[in-house]
Image 1 (tube, one colour):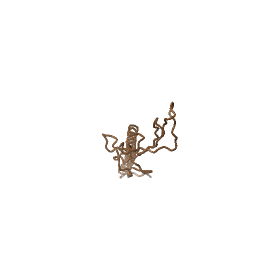
Image 2 (image 1 turned 120 degrees about the horizontal axis):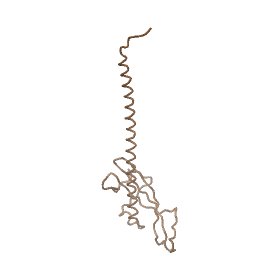
Image 3 (image 1 turned 60 degrees about the vertical axis):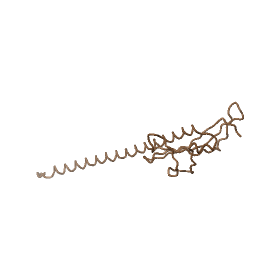
Image 4 (image 1 turned 90 degrees about the horizontal axis):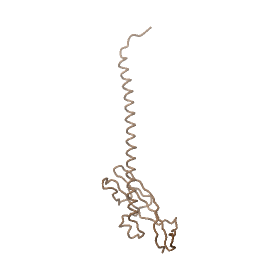
Length: 158
């Protein structure tokens, strides 16, 4: 016995094909949205690290051992384990992107490293400091901080 009534088969085939295309379309949209989110996060982190790099260059350019000059050089007394919300004084890292900013925390004498004598003169030494530099980009809501060690000298040890 064979059935010859095929009414509605075209409608059923069209619905199945539409559902398959809808599923493929949703998969493509979902994958591209995930890529956009990760790309945005990556761009924000790169901008925050670029701000940190600017802060490190500024620190290397302006650092002196005299703590009286640190506030004038833009160093900020950062609380321990700070976040972007704890910092009130940010410096612009770029004239192009005003949302990219950095902060240089007040240097701390590194007690883990004793001063090292400078070659050729026993009265002069290299001293070491630890400093944290943080960067943020407010348009991407990204925040990065880097702890660096700095050797400075030769200076007289007295």
